[in-house]
Image 1 (cartoon, one colour):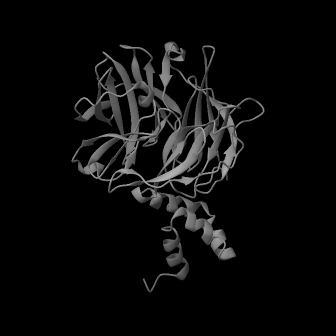
Image 2 (cartoon, helix red, strand yellow):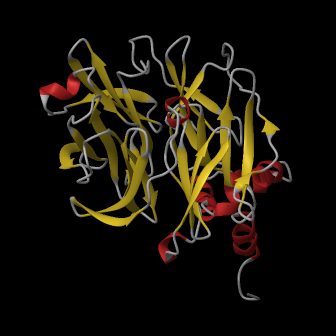
Image 3 (cartoon, helix red, strand yellow):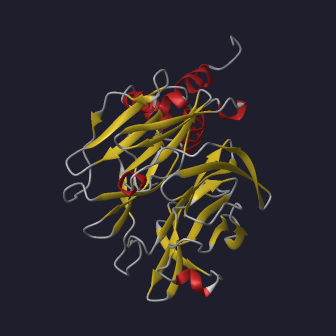
Length: 352
């Protein structure tokens, strides 16, 4: 350690600070401000911030927006702190569509505008343009947030308008949208299919595409973020005699799916993707009956060997699972009701 240059030691220490402390450290001197603003520092700091202690739950209701820690000892939400939106909104009409490395892609429901927002630093960037890019319609569109091989944060926007499909990519680096081709089955353009938000894993964005009735078609659409090519893979072989939902999660850069089926009682299986095929990791007993109003707000996380099913109101039930790959905290990548998100506290900026 004595042989290391002073600036190297300082760099190593600062990349391990909490995100809010990094912000305060920028005011120490000009040299620190310049160092903490470099993309290399932000990238390394982000990679070291993806730990359970930096995970937070953002919850939005009609009156407040709050951020809460998750307490691993009792596996519940900790005390909340109120968050003030840095952008104009109406009655908290903000939908959270996707998140990655501390950035949230959100929609302002009264204007349909898309924004990138870091709730830790409060910085945000509007993605809407005068030529009608960056406007999102719920139940028709799908959003995925990702990083390509050049470390450029991008947003994939799949738009369905009157039977016409448009696919657009926003680049943070060049601050603009462009159209890309997408060849898919014509029936996926129908309103009968529900597209999930995209989950980024291993250089690919994954979307579940599910037909909105019992016994309907369910598939997974994959988008290679570097080649910008799409392909379709099968859904896990789950029973189709009830409601079917697939919630994707990136666990140590391996894609997993919480596949839920049933009507009055739900069965949830955990699957992992190997190549283009799904392998079942575990099955849980039928869970207690859940009202449809709560089901729309459910999320899951795994920590300390237990699998928790949560709503905005708190914990619903716990499934014990003594599995080494799941010793740390892993959130699913979206809330069914768009009224919350599990995110990592970072200093990643929504703009360059």
